[in-house]
Image 1 (cartoon, rainbow, N blue to C red):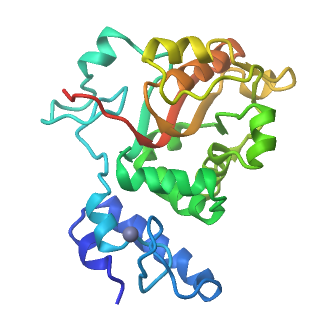
Image 2: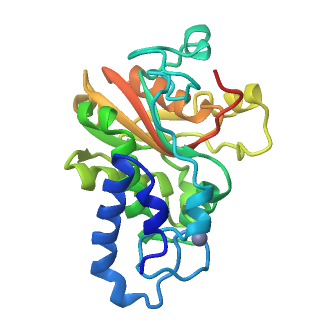
Length: 263
Ligand SMILES: [Zn+2]
């Protein structure tokens, strides 16, 4: 028995669909990785590609109702197109942001598994979740592109987790994956531990559209993919670079996001 089925069975709509997709994908490579483990911890599960009951219980999905612009959850349904106070007071340069889950314990384990342990297989499942949670922004996208790493950090880590997620989203949805639209022209300090204003300053001017790319993005709807949205400083800086480079509209899709306070 798949231990996580009972728990997922209580979840509506797209969660069930994504679980079925994850299980189908898991079946194909299950033979290579026995006994299968939960994607977020070491507990065994019956099939690769799911979370154990404990992790499912701690995985807090972001579902409607949410702010049409920032994707931050509302306590009450305020109707289609409703905006949060934050979106009105401080409109972001991107048009919309969508995320799969709150960035808490379980989402953090998944993100860190992808980032630091080269768990490339995680990217496929996480990308599947992102494609469904961000169905509206994905449907409208002309191209899917990741937040790039600076080449030194890429060399150190050998792997850009955002590119892996962007590729997984594009593969899942048949959208065009364009991994080299943006370049990180300046190495930046880690954002961890910085205040919101320090984060903004840290990434300001850090991105540039590659000279050969403007024809590709000119007037297009670009879906910018990152793993985590904390204050939004990174994706806002990358969005501004894309718009300066000629993109028509930029939407953002992340796996997990920090939700402060709430509306
Ligand atoms: Zn687990």
